[in-house]
Length: 236
Image (cartoon, rainbow, N blue to C red; front, side):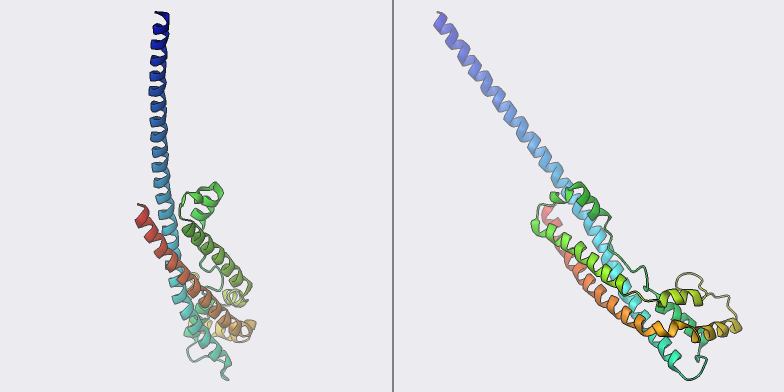
């Protein structure tokens, strides 16, 4: 009798252990599934935020290239006017506007939006992006942007700062509309006698250098935007 009683107890214990084990495994599987689901949702959110930042960069570089094209055209006219033998340009008002336009993007050029990327690096969450290729492409994009920005900063000239001192503005890029003709002529005369002419060619070269870097950045931006879109479509 006692042997049968113990045998029944062992059978019951094994059954209970089996049920508990299955329950634990199911709970672990559910927890893993839930964690995977949450990580997947966070990965999508991360990619969407990065895509938004880089799309904004793409818009900024394209706008910058348009501004830089007009900047160089204005600087060419300024150089021609200052090289002319007459003391006063044919259109003094346009000359002052060209001096101002020539200073555009002479400082504070467009920079990539790094808030999301830097936050992901600081928190270690960049690793939630499962594709190693995408992670590498994102890192390369921001690293090359930092290098390009540093090279641009090294080549800034004194032209924008001198023009800022010499020409009254309504804001950063507009000539003061309240200037009278005599004031305009006096300003032009001051520019003709100022050191500004010594920096026009350097600023033209600077504009061309920034254009080349922005063209590279636009291409890198566009390629990364396409890659992120494809990866997001596959991830969602």
